[in-house]
Image 1 (cartoon, rainbow, N blue to C red):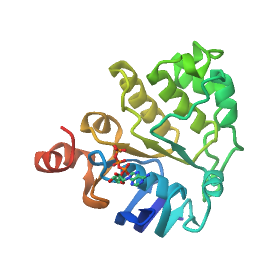
Image 2: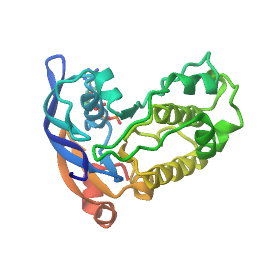
Image 3: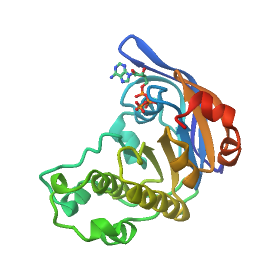
Image 4: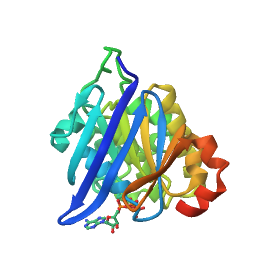
Length: 241
Ligand code: ATP
């Protein structure tokens, strides 16, 4: 049994005829928080969509011991790969509880047979107290930050083993950013693995163990978060600082 939850080798992706990812390789260990960093347009979102099978892609992709390279998005989601897209797709006419219900999927196990954390609205309200204060509020009447939390909470209702979080701190008030960071730390404690996309080092620093830096659809640097925090050259060259 290996400790690698997600391994990506030689990932290429296209939008129509335009090749966006060239040879992206990385991995995420069990219980690890890994940040995929890079400026706007570097290919972070495309990498996540390629993992989920939402864009044309090629490469070796393994998740929780299974080959997912030939699977469709719903099949990949059913294996426990959760995806929180950048453009929070909550249902604005539905309440918080109804939005959560839509994300519900069966409990899951890791490849070694251990049970993955099981989420209920009550547990999620403990994790996101703001949501717990407005269970019957319509999604469309929530702030951007609250909607962001609801999107993450809905993904967790699927009882994922690993969550792809696309820029969870983007366009969100500082207080909520801090709560989002605490949430990620809590999820890590629960044994979940997280792949985070982020262009700003301030948020990534609070939560990440390791970092891969993307630029023009390729990995240009990799190392621990502590190494990146001490490497101003890499920060200036590839990130928004
Ligand atoms: P952002 O922070 O803006 O989301 P990103 O690192 O996630 O940045 P991507 O969204 O993956 O970057 O974009 C990578 C490249 O793919 C960019 O050059 C972008 O213009 C291009 N691209 C993104 N979406 C499409 C699309 N639907 N059709 C064609 N090209 C696209």
